[in-house]
Image (cartoon, rainbow, N blue to C red; front, side):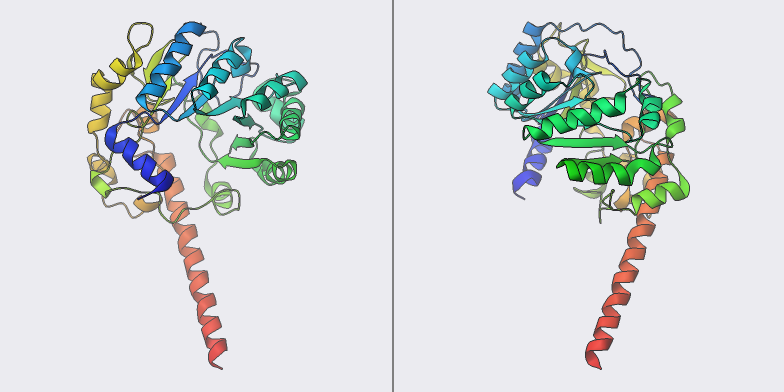
Length: 354
């Protein structure tokens, strides 16, 4: 195995924290109805000097991909200092923003970083987006941010989660992003809040609307979503080659999985990464441990998230109904496409033999 796939395989094998999501703050200009953040007023407990030291620790640990996020990352006054130092250390930096604070000056500063910027845009309809974000003018400001960044040659991803509130907006959003020279990414995943509040789950799309999205060009139905060694493969990459660091300094396996491996105000990243009993427990789990999923006909198309399963059902190893529904629909879509391709092939063969 070579290239990016080989890099991921080595990181999994050697437990290298290849990808780290660094939450600089939970403060935000929006109050999105689907957001997993439970407390926007939580204090930022890692000062600039500790974060800069952390970046050196991550570089030494083998981290290559660093995502800077919030809340709204641009509300933190030292975001540029942190991002610039990350780039100096050679990280591939991704900045996540809702775009509300991106003006000409901020766009210039982001462009100077040579980083990828992901902007959340949920609809081109201002009424719809304002309803989602709770912030008047959010659609206009987000679109303007994309325009400013693309004008400076920034690699921009326009991203949106599929929700009951915006499912009809996806085609127009995709066309607009394409015209702007940005990549468009829509995902059919809504998660509970980090404190377990299930309120965002009411926004999930189900049934025929979900099928329509999964079959559309806006979602790539993969031929196989299960990689590795089947039941002996790791349950998840979280805590093995990926982790999240919260504004309080907690090292957590991912953005939604409960449980902290340790706090950076008390210990070094390496000590937490290598000695945490919680991470050791997660790393010991295998796909085969999810007994309820064994023998499922849709394993190859399943995107089950153990963290979501734990938060939503209380069982890290149990089935996740939303993932079960998606997997079954994707399997049906792929089977229908395969049948169509086979029929087209037969018609071609039949025509060539005449």
